[in-house]
Amino acid sequence: MVTITEEPDESLTNPSQPRPRKSSSTSKPPPIAAAATAETSKTPPSRTPNPFTFWFYFTLIVSIVTYFFASLPSLSPQDPKSWFLSLPTSLRHHYSKGRLLKVQINPNLSPIEVFAIENGSKGSENVVVVHGLGLSSYSFRKVLESLGSKGVHAVAFDLPGNGFSDKSTAEIDESSNGVLGRLLDVYNLIQEKGVFWAFDQIVETGQIPYEEIQKHVPKRKILKPIGLGPEEIGSILGQIIDTIGLAPVHLVLHDSALSMAGYWVAENSGSVRSLTLIDTLSKPSIPLWLLELPVVREVVLGSSFVYSRLINLCCSKGNDVALDVEAHRVLLKGRGGRRAVVSMGKKLNHSFDIAEWGGLDDLKSVPIQVIWSNGWSNEWSAEGRRVADMLPQASFVTHSGGRWAQEDAADVVADSIAQFVSTLPPTVIKTAEEPIPEHVQEVLDGSGNSDGHHHHDHGTHDHIHGGGYMDGYGLGGHSW
Image (cartoon, rainbow, N blue to C red; front, side, top):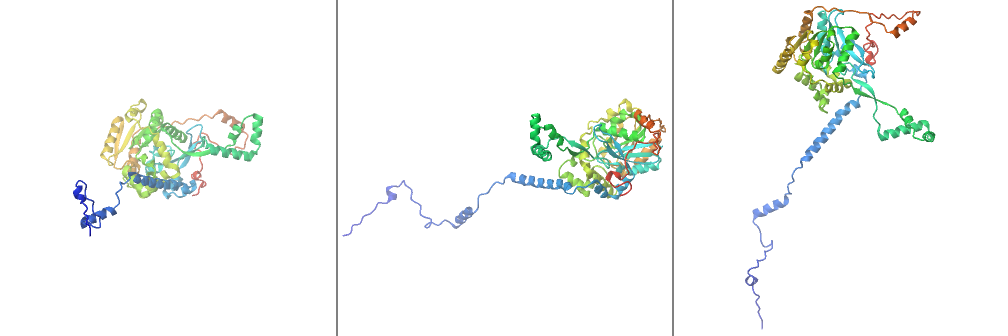
C-alpha cells in the first residue's frame, strides 16, 4: 500500500514572503540590457584631472631652460682679448679712434676707465655728447663725423657700464664663507703652521688665535656691476670736461641722460655754454625690465633677430644696416654690460621733473634747444611739444627719425646742433696757468741738476693718462 503525502505550498501559506529569484541560468535578460551591462563593467571609472600636474611640468621645463641659458656664459667664458677680437670690424675701428680716460668715482676705490672719442679740430666750439642707458658713443659716430666736418670739435664718451668703458669693479668680498669654508681655512692654516701650532697658541695666550686665523684667510675679490646714480654720473662728466679742457661746452643730452646729468648742469651752469635735448625723458627708450627677466633676457640679447625687432619696436625705425644693430647688441651683452645697465637703471631719478628743473634760476641764462621726433608716434610728438612748453627759453626742432635720432637722422641732428651753436656768440676760453703743488715743486727743485731728459710741459699736458688704444684689452699699443 502506497502512502502519498502532499506538502503545502509555501506561497499560499506565507503570502507575505517574496518569492526567491531564479538563478541567472534560468532567466536571460534582454540582449540590449546585457550589452549595456557588459560595457559598463568593462569601462573604468573616470578620474578628474589634477591641475597641479600641468604647473609642475611647466615649472620644471622653465627651470631647465633657465638653467641652460644661464649656464651658457659660464661654459665658454671670454677674456677681454678674445671678446674684442670677436667684435665686428666697425666696432674695432671705432675703438681704434678713441682713448681711455681714468676717472674717480669713489676715493676708496681704484679709478675706472672711460672710453672717449672726438672729431674735429680743437680750438673751435666744443660739443660734448652724453648718450642714454644701453647705448654708447658708437651710436653717435655719424653725428660726430658730421659735426667735425662743420668745424665743430665734438666729443662723446661711453658712460660707465656702457660701450667700451668699465662695466664692473673688483671688490673684496667681506661675506663669510660659511661653516665648511671656515673649517677649510683652519685646516689649510694648520697644514702650513703645523699640527701643534694651535695648541701652542692656546697655551701661551689662553684663547683660540682667531686674529691669526683671520689674517691667513684669503680674501676673495668679486666683480660687481657698476651701478652709478645721477651724482656719480655728474661727477664723471665734470672730470672729463676738466681733464680734456673743454669748458665751457655745448652739452648734448640724449634719451635718459637728462635725468642723469640734469642737476649737474644746473649746479655747473658756468661750464655749460648751451644745452641740446634729443628725445629725452627720465626713462630710457630700451625697456630695461626685459633685460631683468630670466630666459627673456637671454633670448633678447642672444638673438640678433629678436634684438633687432625690439629696437625697431621701441627705439629706431631701422633705417641703418643690420650690422649697426648687431654692434649695439654685442656691446650691451659683452663683459657684463646688461647687469651694469640694469643696475644703473634702478638708480635713475624717475621722479625728475622737467618743469621744475627748467625753472631753476641757474638755468635761465643757458640757451636750450629741444630736438624731437615727429614721425615716431602721435603720443611721442605730443610729449615733445609738452617738454618744449615746460622750457620757455628753448627752441623746438623736429626730425623724421625715431627715438634714436642719431641713427635714423644723423645729418639732421648734426645740422641742428651746428646751426644752434653758430647762432650763439663765440666762446671765449680763458686759459690760466695751473699752480704747481708744493710737494711737486720740491721734487722739481731737488732734481734741478738732473740731465733733464724728461720734459714735462705742465701748461700743455692734458692729464689724460692711459695706454695705447689697444692696451685696454691686452693687445699692445698698435696691433689688433
